[in-house]
Length: 162
Image (cartoon, rainbow, N blue to C red; front, top):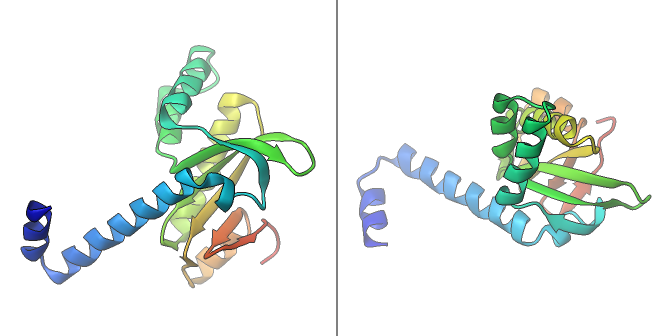
């Protein structure tokens, strides 16, 4: 802890802000994994977190079967949160979420891309989602947000017209 505080003290203001932002993002990712049933309950039921070991094994099987490439496997492994469950109409699905304090267009595109790759790997539908405290207010992010599930500051919005 002392080393961390000394390192922070030696950084410039911008570097400190970046470090704090990364720590906040990591904490939010951890919360969404640890409390997945809470955060994703409006989308799914019978929610189970797919931890990175399970995800790796699942993707190894897909790689061995020729459904995905090594590069695609690596891309999926960068996903912040993957859960499986049932939609309220009974479909077995995965949900792949990218988590950031302030969700931006890049986060949304990564969620969509990784969800498509996971669907290719598993043959099961995958719902792309983003989660955070707020959505960046630029026009590109607002347009992209309509293409995925958005979980923002306790509110859930389904994909659809903005």
